[in-house]
Length: 483
Length: 112
Image (cartoon, each protein chain N blue to C red):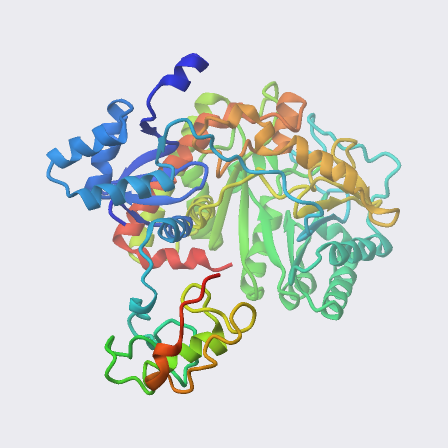
């Protein structure tokens, strides 16, 4: 339609932007970009159908609805509310786009890469494998206390008015630098209390170095723990091996059991990295929950260039999503019965849908979260630490480079990811992981187009499950309102 | 709402925003909801709920005569849409009205 035609055409209702789905026979709408979820009543459904057939002026639409037996007042109210919610749009009024946030955005979390060394040699590791982007030459192997303390000072200083801050310990293998963890946790606890803030901690580990002493520390400091484990012995040992090629399953199993037994003050989750040879979602979930004893298991495909042997192809990815779907329905059954279920990919997405999140950025990297390398370099996140990409200052020498951070936020805003502008899943996805994009396209600001269909498929599934839980056991959803 | 029901937290916020724009102004008729104490909304203090209505929605149980409302609004509160305000624009509006019950005819119209 030409600009002239727009000017002369009579204003009419047309459909707004949303994703329609059905749960337990009831129609729902997921509104874009607000992320609001509504159940449609009969009148709402009828209006959507009529406007869906073709654009209609308000008078015409009202006449049709009057002839269908609706009252003038209820029609007026319904049209007004659907228009204000932007389910239907009148004329060519421009839709407001989210803006780049006002800096300086308060920091919430730092990830300390306390070492760049690891005692395992997992085939898919983004720090050491073929897709490595970090340059650790000349950097210390282990972070020292001065760097860790400066990083914590920076977090407290840059967190502005936030009452809660968070420190994540990462590696390499985090526990190779255990003495630093203890000292850093002490320092952060003391300094946060002085600043009137609450600090909490989390850590990711391959579990090979867990001892009673380490576990008691984790328990005392209420450290949330993520254990990297890929399933039973056969699957786990395919990728997660020592430098001499031995599998690590046998070493970690008793240590994980001890961890689950002794550490009760915070959550302990399993994180599974899926790759071409390890895609048995159901089998892995059953093993980790049933036999090992984890309450929470999350899956993530390995980030890899498509040329790598362990890269997950389209067909394999469909198999994985099939496994996700099976577990997600099982999650639905548990939720309806009021029981917890350990499939965290489902609970994480349901929580975002419940909140009605509408992201301007795909994740908190560069925004509320920053990574810190062993030498004190500040970077976008732990995945970019010690890489020339995404560098944003130094914890001792000048703190955060706010110019670099601002520039990053301007160029990586959803508004700049034009590929995403017509996608209904953008409130939850916003283009996906910067690191994934860099490995695939050589550009952190590229949208992860290779995942689009899967992201939409997954979110559609979770919406249907969310709708069904809202009908059959709405009180279950209250747990997602807690922080 | 007439056409749809909010399900998630964001939808409830959208609903609030819509009602703020499209809903009727109900002020004094708005009840506190089940289990909540009902206070008529207005500018009087809790101890002088002598406004238009009492707790049952009528005027019989007011703890002070409605005539006093004139002074509550004019002197204490200056609800600008309803009465001239004492502080800035009409400081002598009720000078000739010692008792509203008797002298109300002496309270004249004020032109801004």
